[in-house]
Image 1 (cartoon, rainbow, N blue to C red):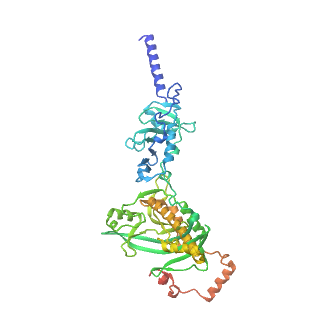
Image 2: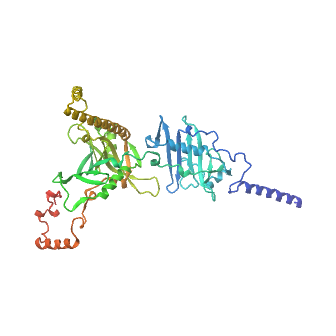
Image 3: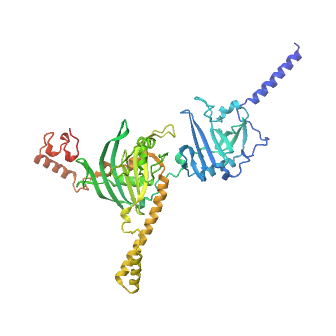
Length: 519
C-alpha cells in the first residue's frame, strides 16, 4: 500500500468520525438559521376556546405508576370522566392551559435523535410502551376540540440546566426535541384542584345552632347479607351560637340505663369554646378530596325507597361505605344510620345541613409521601321548620279583605293584624329563598358520596370529652391551697370506700345507673 493510499484512508476515517461525533452529541444543538426557531409549536391551534378537553399524564418514578387526569366538556358541562363525570370548575383552567400551548414558541432545537429522548426526559408516558425501571419519562399534555381531534399533544421533559423556566419538549409523533419556555407545574392532576371544593357553601356568620349525635354502628355479615350488630349511642347535644363567638348549651343527652337521658353540666364543667370554634371554622373549610357516585334509588334527602332494599348492589355500596338504611320509626320509610355519628348545622337563612360520617375511605394516594386517611361523608340540606312554623302555606282571602276594610275604618287592632300579616309575608319570602337554596344544594349533593380528610372529620365529629371541659381552679373560684384543704377535709370525713362498693356506683360493679357494663 502506497503512502498516498494510506493518507487517503486516514482522511476518510477522520471525516467519518467527525461526522459521527457531531451527529451523536448530547449537548443541545444550536440552529439559529433553522426556520422553525421563533415559530409556534402548534401553529394551527390559535383560539384557546376551541379546547373542549384536556388530558394530563404524569409518570411517578418512585411508585412506577402512571397518573392520568382528564377533564372534558360533556353536554355543555365541564366534567371529570375519571370520577364518574363529577362536575368540574374547569372552564377558566382549561382556557389558561390552552393559552400556554397556543403561545408556546420554539426557542431552539436540542436533538433529532430518538436514542436521546430519555436523556432529555421526553419519553412518552404510554402505559403500554413503558415498563418498571424506565428512565427519562416525561409528562404528556393533550388537548382536543369538540369533535375529539387533537389541537395539541406535547411531551414535556427535563428542565434546561442554567435556564430557569425552559424545558425540553417533543411532539409524540416526532423524534425532534425542542426547547421552550414552559412551567408544567401550572397543570395539576389532583382532583381537588379542578372542582369547587367549598362543599357546603356556608357562611360561618350565619350559623345559629349545631346538633351533635355521637354514636357508632357496627355490622355483621350473615347468610342474608350484612346486618347491624350494634348501635352504640353515647351523646346528643345542641349548642347555640350568638354573635358568631358566644356558645350556649341548649340540651345535653347522655346514654344511661340503655337510653339517652337528659342531663346537665356539673358545677365544675363548661363548654370548650376553642374546640367548638374549630368545629365552626371547619364547616367553612370543609373541602373534599374525592367523590364516589351513589347507587341509584337513593334520594338526595338521604332517604331510600323501599324497592331500594331489593337492590343488592346498592345496599352493598352503602354498607361498604358505612351507611345503613333502617326503618327506625316502623313507618315503612327508610332512614340512614352511619358508622360514626352525625352533625346538623342550622343557619340564619333557614337551611339545615346534615353531615353523616361513614367508614374510613383509605389512603390518599396523590403523592408517594401521603399517609393521610380519608373518610366517606353523606351530606343533605333541609328546611328549618322551627323558623317557619308561623307561616301558613295558604292565606285566607276573606281574612285579608276584612283586615283591609278594618284598616280603612281606623280599627287599631286590625292595624296590628296587618302588621302581623306583613311579618308573615316577610317570613314566607325568607322561606321560599331557603327552599330554593336547599333545592340547589341537594341537586349538587344527591348523586355523591363525598370523601374528606380524617383531620377535618376529627374537627367536626366531637365527643363529650372534646366539647366539655373542666373549669380551671381560678374560674371555679378556688385557689390551689383551698383545693388542698378541701381535699384533706373530705378524706377525713369520708374514708376511701372498699373496692366494689355498689352504693358509690363503682365501675367494678357495673352500676346500671351510670351505664356501666355488667362485670
